[in-house]
Image (tube, rainbow, N blue to C red; front, side, top):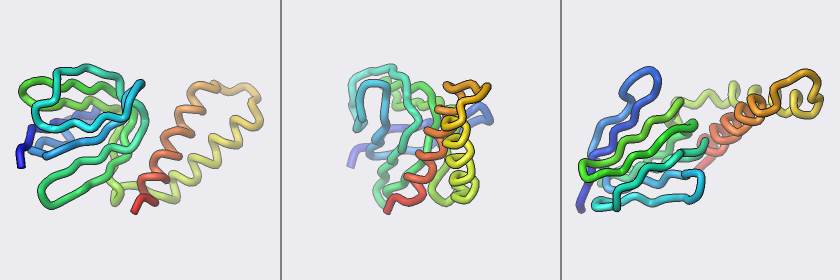
Length: 132
């Protein structure tokens, strides 16, 4: 099967640099399946699940916001965070969800946008962790 080079970077450096068969990622407008030979594209990535398919694996990650660049050389994904299912601290994610939900319910002297983003990240981590 054909492959393409996927590079993933976070603020902490390079996270992933391997050849893959396919990725599935959510942008502001679409859920995209990227295969070898995909048309060039630049898109904003949402907090979501990232699926990476290789010849022997189907790996799932929780990713934060970022940018996707598809070009003739492969795919570059710049995200503010990424965690594989095994890296997710589920208890911490559940506490973050509870804290964000409580803050939104009380809405007293909070940055609503910041809290909503924290809630989205927590819900994404929980969903990825619980994904079969």
